[in-house]
Image 1 (spheres, helix red, strand yellow):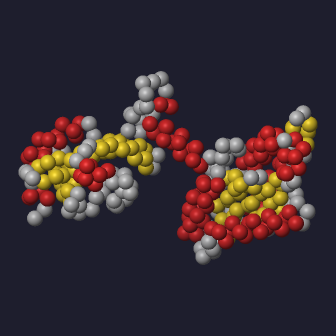
Image 2 (tube, one colour):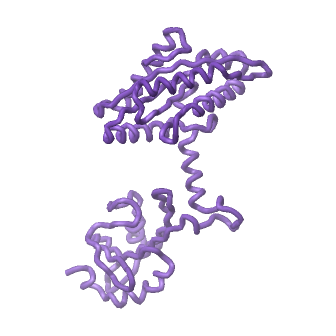
Image 3 (cartoon, helix red, strand yellow):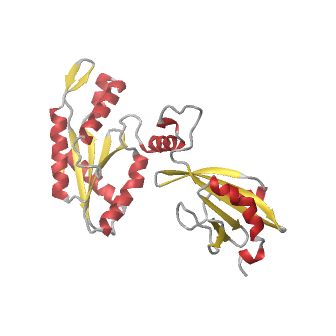
Length: 298
């Protein structure tokens, strides 16, 4: 016997038909058996025993508001963000024939849900607010490039993509030479300005949107070059080194020269871990600094 046989479907239709005009997806969930009915064109179609969604995979959410609605006997709402789209999900318990079901209402609100009362621009859409919040979590506030959190999340993904496509991947570890002297002589505010301009100089040398650069920590930066073998990574590092050598950094009205050391590591071995990959590049950077700085070590 399926869930449709156990309940009065006409009664359900009478209760939810008007909601179809307001939401993109309507489904009825029996939270005990996990059976699901999808409401579509006036029909209720059974969709098996596992919760599923228009967004994400067929799995129970970590924050399952349907189970919470059942437990507390309350209506709950939440915003979900997936693939650069925003969804408003409303769940409410419904008593039918001595059985408690959960009605789940899903509406895409990427461009239609606003925060506050101003409609004079796209900036007030909730989706843009969510995107801005995401940027805050992955962007270094000083240099405005990616931060360490982004590096930790993105590098394993790019390594896996390159392995699957049988492409190499290179990373370049970069460190500002004698940066402590800059801070000691000109102050930390001037040192911050050096880091900002230094990051911009590095960023201007990467190839395309696939390449990226992040602040690894302090005056150390990581450049990721997916699909690039050692020779291609070396070309990019040499371009960065030359760009920095030619640049005049103006600190307290005085022109100073900055140099940098580079360590490059390349792999196409799917067995290498992220930690080993980073350690390899860090060791090459250490070798460059020990060899006199302002140089590149492969």
